[in-house]
Image 1 (cartoon, rainbow, N blue to C red):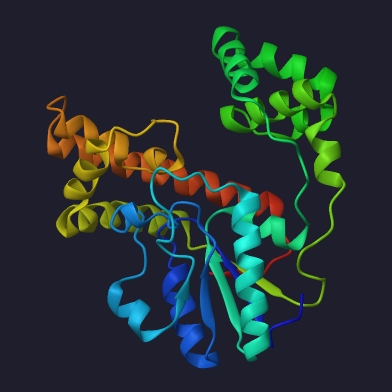
Image 2 (image 1 turned 135 degrees about the vertical axis):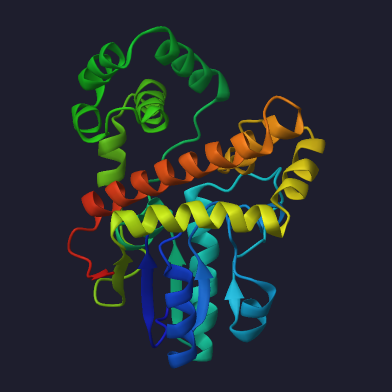
Length: 291
C-alpha cells in the first residue's frame, strides 16, 4: 500500500472529545476523517453513537461512517480491509488521513496486524458460551489457561466476550488465540503513523457521558431505538448491543420509566468509557495523551 502524506490515529473512550479534536486537526491539515469505531459504522445508530453531525460531515470529509445496515456484521478484518482501501485511495490523491474512534482492536489491526483466524462455527461458540454461563469465571479461566495461558492471564476479569472468543478459537482450531495473533504483519508500516489517546480526567469524562445521554434523548434516541426494535433483528448483532438500545427498549416496552432508562443508559455509558480507558492504558501506554 502506498503511503498518505500524513496518518494520525486518534483514539479514546466515548464522550472524550476525540471527534472534536479530529475535526480541528482535519481543518488544519486538510485530512479526511476515517471512522475507527465499531458502532458508528451503522446507519441506524447516528444518535445513539453520537456520530458526527450532518454539518460536520459537510464541513470535513468523513469516511466509513454510517456505511453498514444494522443487520450486517462487520468483523475487525472487514473494517481493516475497508480502511486500507480508503488509505490507498487517499495516498493516490496525496491527501492526509485521520483515523478516529474508540474501538481499540481496529487500531491494533493496522499497527500490529490481523491474524488469519478461521471462522468459528456458531455451534462451537454457542457451546462455549453455554459452558461459560454454566460454570463460574474462575473455573472457565482455569480451563482456558491449559489451552491459552497468555490469554487467560491477559484478559481482564469480567470480560466475558474475550474469554469466550479465546476459548472458542482454541477449541476449534487446536491453536491458542495468542499464537494466532502473534503471527501477524502490520498493515501500516512502523514510521508511517503517529498515535494519541484522548484521555480527560475521569470526573470530566463521566460528566460528559451523562450529558451526552441527555442530548441523545433530545435529538431523537427513542425514535431511533423504536425503529431498530421494530426490525426484530437478532439481539446478538453488533448494532443491537449498542449502549442505550437495551435500556431504551425496556422503556418503550413499558417495563421502566424514561427517567430510569436515562439513568441506566448513563451508567452503561460510564461503564463502557471506563473499559475503553483501561484498554487503551494497557495496550497503548506509549501513545501521547491528550487531556
